[in-house]
Amino acid sequence: MLPDLRLHDRLRLRKPHPCGSYEWTVTRLGADIGLECLGCGRRVLLTRRELARRLKANLTPRETESNDSTTDS
Image (cartoon, rainbow, N blue to C red; front, top):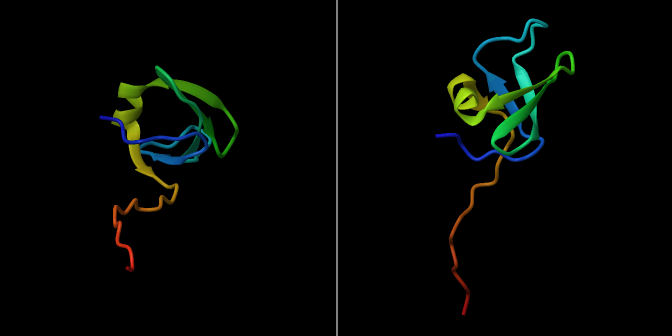
C-alpha cells in the first residue's frame, strides 16, 4: 500500500537515477504519480504500485497528528 503522499513531497527511491540523484519531488497525484528528479529535472510517471515498490523513504517532515482534546476547565 502506498503511504500518504502530497504534492511537493520529497521522496528517496531505492535505486539512483542515471544522473546519480536518489531524490525526487511529487509533481502529480492521481492514478499515476508524477515525479521530478531533483538532480537533473527529468519528469517521469509511475503507477502507484510501481512507486510503492521503488520507494525507500519520504523525506518531507510531517507533524504528528495528535488527537489530544484536553481542555483546561
